[in-house]
Image 1: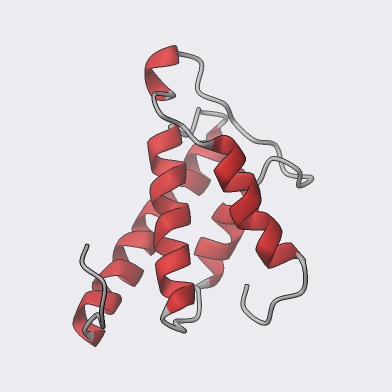
Image 2: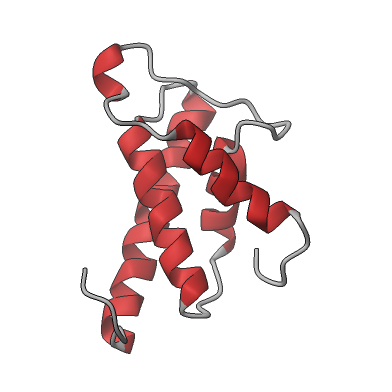
Amino acid sequence: MSAGVISPERLSEVLRLATTLADRVLDAQIAGRPVPADQAGALAKAAGLLHDYGVDWPPLLTQALYGLAPDTDAAVVEPKSAVALPNADLDGLSRFFAGFRKGTSKP
């Protein structure tokens, strides 16, 4: 994606897709199924983009992200196969969430 301003229509689409993915992630967590690292990463990137543009997160997205954070009380479902973890940056995800736990104004 190129640097610059994103149109409201595109931000709306990012919000819609992030909400849909958050629903799938929460469904997998509730059912005890693994959440692939690429889905967790995509959700974190979408949340970061929305945060950067001042778009409030829907509660579903916030709940899914806190469920994925490794040091929360919620159980993190790890993929069982090595195929689900290529290029996973779980440390990067931890650093991403740490910024939100230190009292920022956004979720």
